[in-house]
Each structure stands twice: as C-alpha cells, then as structure tokens.
Image (cartoon, rainbow, N blue to C red; front, side, top):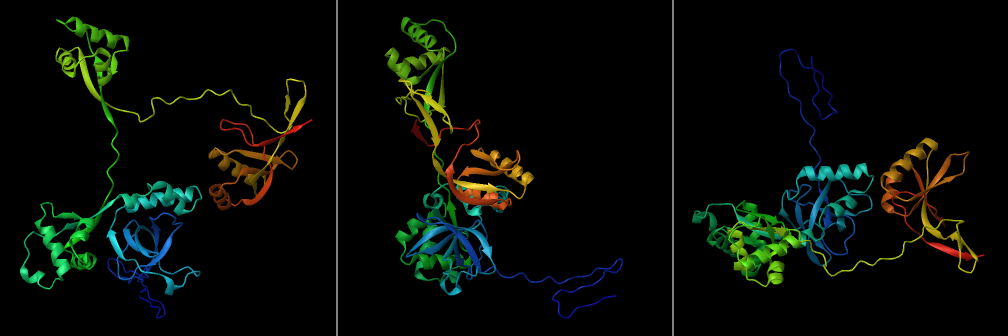
Length: 402
C-alpha cells in the first residue's frame, strides 16, 4: 500500500517484502557563493565571491579580483545564501579556478575539527596551518592533456591565442609550461587558456614551492688507527682523537694544513669515514648574555634596601578579561580549559572559600573559546596577581616607597 503527499517533493512509500522501490531525492540547492582566503598583504578574514558558472570545491586555488588587481585565493567554504549584511549586487565573481583539489578534503575536515575543539574561528586555524605567502611562492603551470598530434579539423576553430598556446605545449618535451612563460609568449593568453580549459585539452595546476634544503657539510670520523701510516697521517689521526673522534672535513684540513687528497687516502686505508651532515643554521659567534637572576615580585611583597629602608610592592593595573561561570562547578571547568592552554590566571575568592571569577590577560582567541564554553567574559583593568606555576614569569609592577 502506498501513500503520497502532493505538497511534498519526496515520494513516500512502504516497501513490500521481496520487492524493490525507488525514492526521489530532494534536489540540493546550488552553492552560488564561496568564501575565499585571499593571499594578499593586508587582507583580513574571508571574502565572499560569486561562483558564477564555475565548479568550485573547498581547497581549490582561485584567481579573484581584489581591489584593482587579480590575486590568488583558497576556497574555504561554499554558501547557498549570502549573509544579510552583504548585497548581492556588490559581490564580484571568481575569475578562474587555478588548481582543483590542491588541498584534500580531509585536510579541511581536520582544520574544522581543530577549530571546534579550541572554540576558535576557522579563519584563525587556517592562517596558522598554512605557510604564509604559500600562493605567491607557488608556481602556476599549464599541462597538455591530449596526444601531441591532433586532427586539424579540431584545431581549426581555435582562436589565435589558444592555437599558439597549444602549439607551444605540443612542441615542449614535457608538454608543460609555466603560466608566466606562456603569458610572455602569447598575446591575450588568458582568453586562449580559458578556451583550452573549456575543451578539456589542458589543465591548470599549482606547483608547490620547493622545500628549503638543509645545508650539508662533510664530517671526518675516526674509525681506527690503520696500518702503514706516515708521520703526517698519524698526526692527523692524533688530532682527531684529541677532538673526540669527529671534525668537519674543512676544519681538519685547515688544522692539519693538508690537502683533501691526504684525508681521502686515510679514507681508503680505513682510518677515516666521510659523512654528510646537516648544519644547524645558527650564528656560531653569537654570545648569550649571563644576566643576574630576576626576582618575581608579588602584591604586598617588601624589599629591603641597602640603607635599611623598606620598599613595598603595589601591583599595577593591567588590561584583563574577567571570566565568570554559571556556578562553582562551571567555573572549575573553565579553569581547567584555561590551565590546559598554559595561560597565567588569577582566581578571585568572593564566595565562602569558593572562587567567584578568574582573571586572565586579554587574548581574543581565549575569549572566543571561553564564550563558546558558556562563560561570561568582561574587559576590565585592575591589578593582576596570577598563581605561580611552571609557566609563571614577571609582569608589570609599580614600586611604592614607604
């Protein structure tokens, strides 16, 4: 027996035993807007653009208008409706999809989980997770997807710009060129590339910047005394012994005033081994100052001067957040989350032996987290005396002579 509801777009029914049936799915609304993280100095937050006729997924690399220029951006989130604060007539369209799936969908899921866990806006997590200037340091490239030889009837309708790009790619051994090179070689290259992309003959992708390679240096390692050594060769081994059995290859050369061939002879005799090692990029001549140990001063502490006078410590006012919970149990939960982030905090007792509020230094990320946990957070300015702990350090005080 089947029943239908004319006002509903779904087909509803009850399956009979050993029979098959089909239900119609409600069509999903088209995502017409996309929030983009723009890779441009001075850009803050996410910017909304119109998807137009493009197919965009989170993690795609886009070209978008930003002011009077075209800049790169990362698609963060698709929207089926605009926020009420935005006027659709003022929203500009995405210019182009440079690379699809540059970041896998699982990566964005991870970032969203991090944002939810720390009660932090997604944009903050994205900015921390992605290397700064990633897009500006990456290279856009165009790759030919078709065989080198094409039927002339297929290319006859191409525009001159598209035909020239196609010819350049066909002549290149790897069938691949940087977009910057093609722009220099072909007039109206952007229009020609769009034509080839629409036909599916080429693909546009982003090549990540090459990772920074660590600096390598050869080190000479003493392995044994060896046999049939000359006095000079034995002197080299003695120097290595006094230095703990290892020295940089060039340093050993300079110390013993020998050529590299002398050291390599010791390698062949089995007395030395040469090995490449990474060099820590620190200034070898840097001197770390040895300052006297500092004192941690607290409210109402006293210092005795050399002439016998006492100096009282009065904590200076600081810009703080006052955190209040719904009750003592809730405040204890908030204190746990604050402590879990190694944040200096002061618990103020205003009930009978029970803390009524927590004071912390102003930090908008912590504020958003605490509000997300149901806390009441207020900006205040008053003396701050955080509890001592493993991460405690000095903060500002005013000295009052008494």
